[in-house]
Length: 324
Ligand code: AHR
Image (cartoon, rainbow, N blue to C red; front, side, top):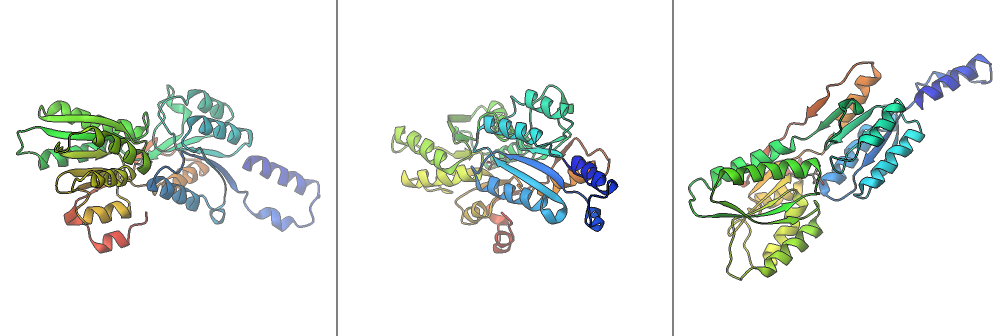
């Protein structure tokens, strides 16, 4: 699109069809189409804001933003529309890993670079995307299970875990689940009581865990609720409280993202561990576009730095300074 505009402007200049040649000295805008997953979590909302701020008009971008409302078919439709509109770049946050080959081949054929942000797409040919920037979701899961290993190091009795998964087939779910399942295989006394589908939302986690707790005898205790994001933890805490469990005392809640609300609950002792997943990926995605605009090749993969939080390292200052 940008190339098309530049050609049209120079043609206008050449045939003297414009009276104000100084207006044509403005560099053409770079048109970026973003296909976002949806707004399922506080993380996702912060991620959308970060992307919009990074690809703003004052930085020279015209942004076409599409919210797929958590449906992969909507993302595929959005990418096809971006191709028709001849955008300069497509930024895709893939809902799940599979099913992208055809549409990314179409983008490649149209000569439009695709940048993957946040999760990965599992494609046969990695030339179908120019670069990826996001989180090391498996690494996040490994951090969580390492914390569990030290927390339960002295326990020889059974460690009972309720696992609330995120959107099935997404890189975030696959990585965090894999880390937990590998740890369970390593520790004969660790046991997953149930695996629930929380789809990264507060409402689904609340409902799924509430329904499961209804089936348990009153006195049955367990040790951990491993939630694959903060919003699932918020729903889980609500369900646990309603069923008479004291969070942080009877049961450890673990989650991923580290939004201000989760840090607050961690500071209050209600969430035992929060592993950071940083949604502020806009500047990193924009840097990739800038690199390509300058004719350079961006790194194929980049992981954003992340850390983890327990009650002892939560301060008011940390929560107040949190951008999401
Ligand atoms: O892909 C990132 C994950 O997706 C975040 O952990 C979660 O909150 C989001 O919905």
